[in-house]
Length: 415
Image 1: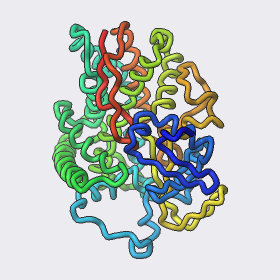
Image 2: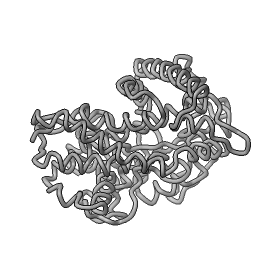
Image 3: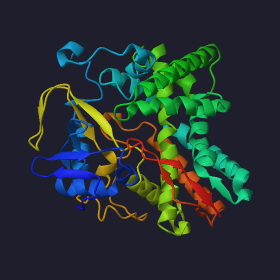
Image 4: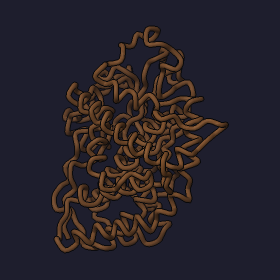
């Protein structure tokens, strides 16, 4: 590779050096992923001091491999693993994480997901179709006459946070505050968050939880036709969600219900426009729209990394030996660009039909909100391009320095 490449790969030892804050990487990770696929799809990332996997088959299998889990303390103590004690300044954040569907492992995960699934059924999602379309059109009505817009603030952020708030039964006018809390919390999932970031995330967690406890108390007194009320009433084998489980699940659904979709929507619009494609055939009918949405999620995924703990000592087929408690990194977006799985993977082909991507994960932690995200994209993208047929990039999009959550700082458009 050229000396200007942001990555250094020793293919023999499978050791890699890469700075996640190098603009040559985070602005366009595709070329780096191509280099990894060619030389070392399983590699030891020196700066992160752990093994990572970029191949589609590897990532897909490891996401489903029950020798690995989202947490480790259900099978070993901190002392046994040599892990430090919890940080007191993260107590509120950690409390939400402890009961989070995303972090739990069976049997706790099985029980919680079953209860949430009963409330998060497909008919609830499909029933939002008219509401999402009306919201998208109403937002465009507000800026169509201006001839320009910053799409993230005016459109991409508002649609998913409004939809998930209404689904849960949280007042829609709280949208801006929900976004603030969410933005502060998700910064914790990047490598080595700063102390300031940790304090902000903990404060956001405390405020978010306190607010939702008030909402839950009100719905216990007077249930409504919403997801929170359904989760409060949901029961399995005589058990219901605990208060902490209710709050953590609501936070997860609110955060995950809009954070990734905001970036996916922005990434999709930027990708379509930067490739100079005619949007009309991309959204000509439901089948074409579905293929376009799936290709946008494959090519321009917002979430690039999931991590897992080895729950026991494990030796993988690649000869990689892992000890109990060690973390591995599963590179979802890199797996979506694996040339062993997708033809010409660095090409954006909206008509592509080569099987599923891994942007929603796989296995027991497959994204519970995938049907909602797909519906929001399948409605908001074609409506935008149909209403504004001369849409174009007003300037080159500014990519955020946040590799885990790949998205734009802003997306300025004109017509």
